[in-house]
Amino acid sequence: MTGWTADEMMTVAAARALRDGARCFVGIGRPSTAANLARRTHAPDLVLIYESGTIGAKPARLPLSIGDGVLADTADAVVPVPEIFNYWLQPGRIDVGFLGAAQIDRYGNINTTVIGDDYHDPAVRLPGAGGAPEIAASCREVIVIVKHSPRTFVERVDFVTSVGYGTGPDDRAKLGLTGRGPVLVITDLGLLEPDPRTAELTLTQLHPGVDAARAAEATGWPLAVAPSLRVTPDPSPAELAALRLLERQD
Amino acid sequence: MGVIASLPEAVAELVRDGATVALEGFTHLIPVAAGHEIIRQGRRDLTLVRMTPDIVYDQMIGAGCARKLVFSWAGNPGVGSLHRFRDAVQRGWPAPLQIEEHSHAGMANRYVAGASGLPFAVLRGYVGTDLPVHTATIKPITCPFTGEVLTAVPALNPDVGIVHAQRADRAGNVQMWGITGVHKEVVLASRRSLVTVEEVVDELDPRPGAVILPSWAVTFVAEVPGGAHPSYAMGYSERDNDYYLAWDAISRDRAAFTRWLEEHVLNRVPAT
Image 1 (spheres, each protein chain N blue to C red):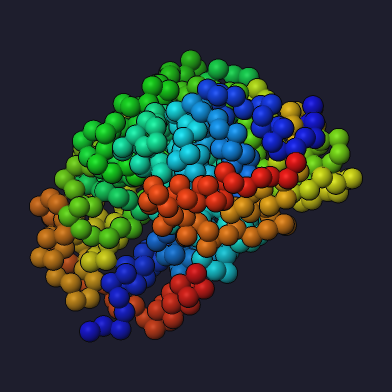
Image 2 (tube, chains in turn green, brown; image 1 turned 30 degrees about the horizontal axis):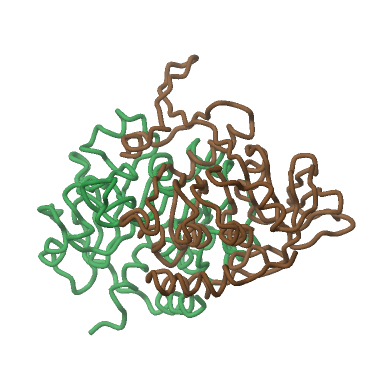
């Protein structure tokens, strides 16, 4: 028995991945919770950018949407939507893109569009792309936060909404994508990072109490495991207190 | 010419069956009351355009107004899926729904091209994704100066663009502030437009960061206090997050949705 849930461990691990002062394009849901937690713990100068056009938002409570009034009220600047994509994201001014996924594959490609083989007759119609394709293409690096399950971690996504490494290590350069792509995938079981040689997502770290076999079972491809697996430090009392306060205010 | 009209009059004048209609508002200032008026007037076969189809388009799709949806993200923000949209795409209820799917960057640039009088916009986008496979309005284009291959998307020029704003004066000049999304772009890109406002005032005193649309750039202005609910109008109202959460259960079930539609939209007579 630990004093925290797997969800809390995942959010804390994601918050820790954000460096103080970084400019971070934040998706709603878990990425937003983690980014706001980071700002309340080790990264007070993290710059939160939401696709509604709010740059440098400092919300006192968690927003439900990317356009809640609390974001506009506290932002350094509120810009029109064409401007956030054209002037701020596209030229590479944003350090980190922070995304979720309905499916992610062994090369870090993300699907948020449809589940099933037939786009025109999908098993499940998902919300679609939003800002993600260009965030994944143009942020200097991408961090993905997603719960680990074989339905989510698939050999090949049913639909490429946002490009990770395509089919291997050379695809991003061939496609002319300016950002590095996904450098870290944070789950409720541990951390995956792209292998520097093959670009395949590889288990590099486990959360306390989780073993590699469990992560492999929750992955829909034969999961590569780094030779020396790190273990995530337990969430600190300060991190847990800040997270619980944030979620209670939500 | 920024004619001040009632909401039913303006919608009746502007929105015809088969038209291409864009209701915009990026979480903020969504013209929900205008969407409900379109439902009440029984419009059919509309091509609905919107970056973020959320509750109001779920309602319009469920009510049978739409033939096609042009969009980039269709969901209930922070809550989950749009169940009426899903039912239309997956099971053709109440009518089949064609889709034309983009990314936010693509849609925003399509409005910019439309507002600019250009046939298309250029961006770095979509490359390597499966979107161009299924969406005919995404094509590669070579830069004539550098030879770099970029992406082109065609201009959006809806028949009617509809947004909500905070205020207008009696001459029909419109003022809005806070998150203004693609408000200016959609009004300027559309052949005709309607702006619903919280209030019509004698004089528009300056506001930090405000966007002004001169009266001559707008077709109709209608005073509809609370017309953005459950979204919000900064300075007038708060986002009704509980409504977005409650919509999930209402919209999951066809019968529950139909009851809701009758009670909250069809049997409500708007002030004229």
